[in-house]
Length: 214
Image 1 (cartoon, rainbow, N blue to C red):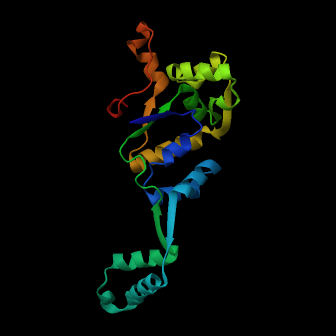
Image 2 (image 1 turned 90 degrees about the vertical axis):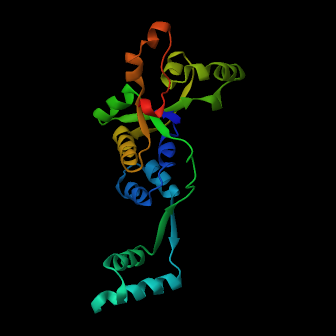
Image 3 (image 1 turned 135 degrees about the horizontal axis):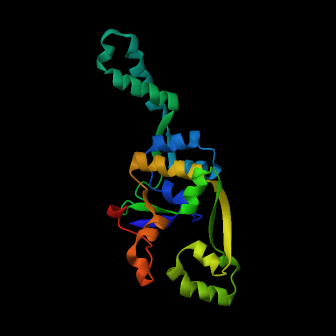
């Protein structure tokens, strides 16, 4: 299982990377207002144009549409042939084997869910390692894996970079559409889990869970 937090700059690419359904990718491209979501969906979607012989074959099938008996073809086959000619090719996906050996999930924070509810913008950010001094980079290498939360990292006075903002509802819709039609990503309400866990009594906090615990 691989989990990524909702504030991570790669969250959109992470979610779309596991989408194997070309129809859903096309739906995202046609319906999202977010250019980053659209771009990653376009990059994932693969289109193979029909060859001349394929066009002739499908047209030959369609020609039987008005002939009694449909030339032995079923209505479904004729409909599929019409769709092939209409689209001009076949849609599939690039990197269909990418991350096939792992489930993916997203950690959702209260900050993100509040932004969804209020139809607000949400910052995608990460420690600003590109601008760190030698000492700051040493601190990052030593402590980031223990902190693991950009909000806490910023509270500690470390530099954080906002890579972009996204309308929270666009990201929320992406998560829900992909989860509905491909069963991924899973959703882990990160802050809620930490509010309710007894690990706090031991000075610990939850950072992830197994897929069955979502």
